[in-house]
Image (cartoon, rainbow, N blue to C red; front, top):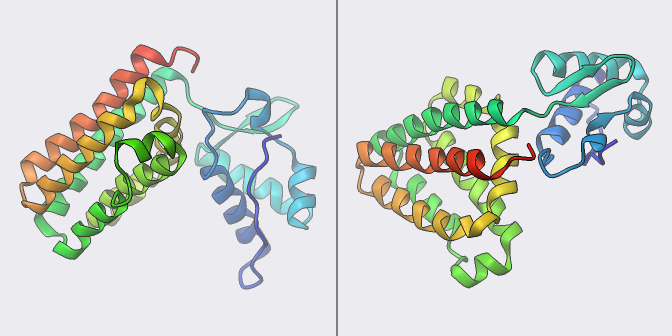
Length: 227
């Protein structure tokens, strides 16, 4: 079973809700396209032991997560974290491109200047050499940047929709950022996106964000044949 980063259960909500929240958070923090297939399996007994609860709330949580598409049932073998096929991932990236590009338009139109400035601050400590030497740190900054655009849109429905596919976008961006030095193009694209937002150019911001995401789809389609 994959080693999930499980934390302590909070005492101020129901056991079922706490167990669900803890497992869900741990799953969404997993880079599921970087781990072996066997490590996707979830063992009810182990989860119960690590969280200090019975298996009943574990089963309830896994059923709920199955409905959300985050886990899948395996006949007579329990559950596993759900990973998408390459074709499904390409569709997810296209949907993300639509969501984030609209978010960028809304940011350019409505977000306070200080909020837009927070996007530039995410990359303040990175230059070409530092990115290459600290790729994991840059990957996390990259992920924060894209999610921050979603947050700054101010559209709750858009954000909730994006949350449904975030685990896959987070994982595939983490997996591919170092492939063929994609990080070099990534930082250039990010700076152009920030400049368009600062200029309040909604059409340009929307196009740049969409093209940036679709470039990821093109890369995955051409290179990640083991998905």
